Length: 438
Image (cartoon, rainbow, N blue to C red; front, side, top):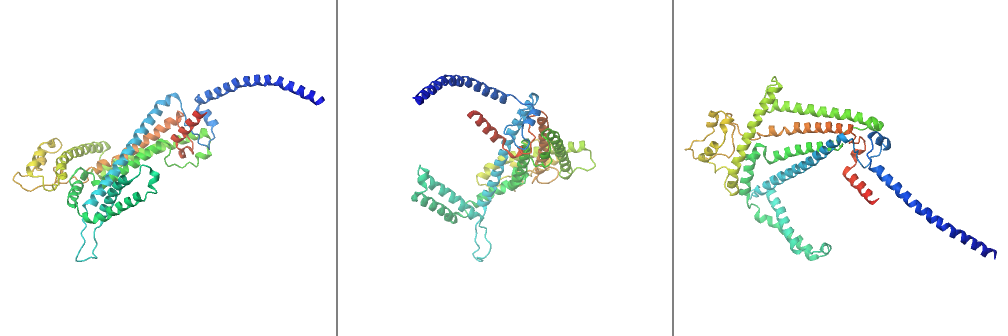
């Protein structure tokens, strides 16, 4: 009986506690909600650079970059715009470099003649042409067999014996068949390659290989500028790791200003070197005279480039049609083309007249311009002009360092030794995903 009474009493007490617990639970829900909203509002509010440095662990790269002061926001947007277009330019330059190298290799392969020496079988033979044709044949026939025999389900192709044997046989057939067209198109492609290398606008740039070399240099400078914009340029950060967050900014500014000074000095020194070594100016001439002479020579080179491009448009249909580039340009065509240009505005009239051919001359000439008054051809003429991309690239990198200094002063750049090892775009995406999930 006692146990039953105790049980009834405890049941009554628990029944009395249940409404109280529910009331407390209902009261806690709004409080938790208000606390969560307060935290979210605190996260959304910008933090001053000094407070942020105190809150962040200096040895841990936080995923979100600094927001910065309001006055620096236009420069932040400009930096993002600059980086976007510079990245696109780098991608374009890389594509152009790949295209120039592939074109050069393809033309070299198609113009190489396969001619074994019957009298001396051990004599060396150029097999580059037949190897290139074997690769081309294997790719073409293999691709055709793939599309003809493939199953719509990719998983079934791994066990489809007909598909595997068919593609393999097509690849082997394409390689073996190269022997039967080893010299097909050799004359045609040799004519096209020789025209590009020795009598076209590419001749002024050093040919296809010379063009690819300049693209490589340009790509390296663009990559250096992009790395500087993201703080991923090569630097020694041993000292920075022993400094407090507040001391890192002034030390970083000193380093960036020094780097900008070095880049500016290198840019000016390279311009001075080009003026003396490539434009043949005196070392005793003043800087103003050098710049004036370089500007004049550069303008003349651009005129010659425009004239060669016009001549290329005249030569291209002939070359594509199979006409030998050395044989088509006669005296009448050449003189007519010379009269159509403003040569007298850039060169003395007597020197321009000396470039004209005798109308009675029946010989042909190369479709390549010469420099009036010098008798020199224009092979590699524009290399000295393209080399200005190096001082220009150094100048752009110097501006990147100066802009980074301003952004750091405004609190829009995080000066952290570990920040250079992170991918900001990936970190921002991950943080946004976490914020959305919460």
